Length: 175
Picture 1 (cartoon, rainbow, N blue to C red):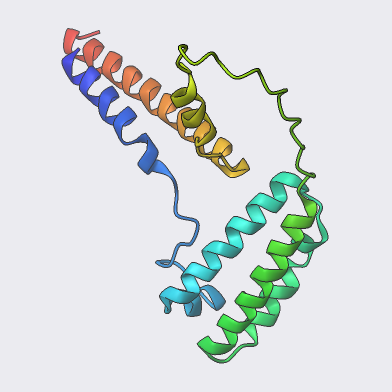
Picture 2: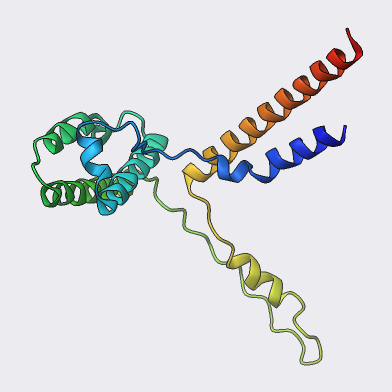
């Protein structure tokens, strides 16, 4: 039982690290192999993939997503890293502009009516709490998906470990 709890704890502890790298340089060929040769190009490719992911979250049929095949084909024709870098920079700017245009308009919050000032003898109790809530970090659409996938993978690993422990117990008993 102790082993099972330790294994479950390890799975839960390292679950945030289970996020898969989107660019596999070990088995890359063609364009991706040339991208993997330069850390700057790897960063640009990761940025491109993140922008595409966010755009797919908002509009899976967006024309910018449909044009990805043409972009990759044009990058195949590049002979050096400078050409690849220029192409990635221009394309990422286009994707960023398309993403900004595709995002729904921001909801304008109506300010709360101002309350009368507190009496001089009454201290404002929740000033610190209000400031802390306003400074909270915001989550991007991809963060929710990553969190859900991480949770599901962690639960599947935990179930697999429970099943393996039960099989080991049955084997030890001779069943």
